[in-house]
Image 1 (cartoon, rainbow, N blue to C red):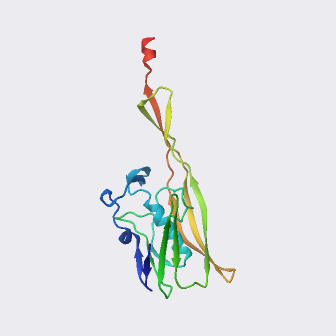
Image 2 (image 1 turned 30 degrees about the horizontal axis):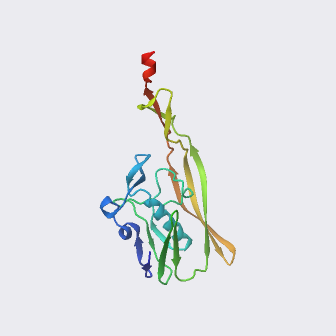
Image 3 (image 1 turned 90 degrees about the vertical axis):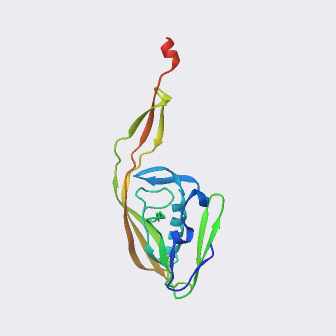
Length: 208
């Protein structure tokens, strides 16, 4: 919040936010490792970078670095996510508007909102996500566990199709559609379902 970019200045999410560690106050939440959702320090930060990314492209700024997730996420349309990882993947954009750009951030219990202020653009933009292909996941993985009784089961991870998608930015001027540009193509892997099945025997069975 409160970042001001001069003309030609580049913004780096990782440089601005810093490393996500427990010492810096970050907590455990969902992250993606080796094609699976799991718990990790700083999970959820990609929702922040994704929200900023979408505000920036609708503000007409130039994206210079962006990365998609390996798996489709549920909080934004395909081809409009912005994955960040401190050591490898950043979100960067440049202010090429000819004036200063100011970024404001608003937080609530269940939301984050970005607003981009600067020289008023002559165009307006609309995002369009198109899924071009889908792939079924492998047959669900069944994991035996003595935490559950025989006959009991628990879903660890829901299955989800993999997809290929494209992101388009449509430009309007004076209410007229003047440009339709594909800004990215992405591929999200399928998610294999995982179910825990019980192996624990009821003591009454042995007594019988």
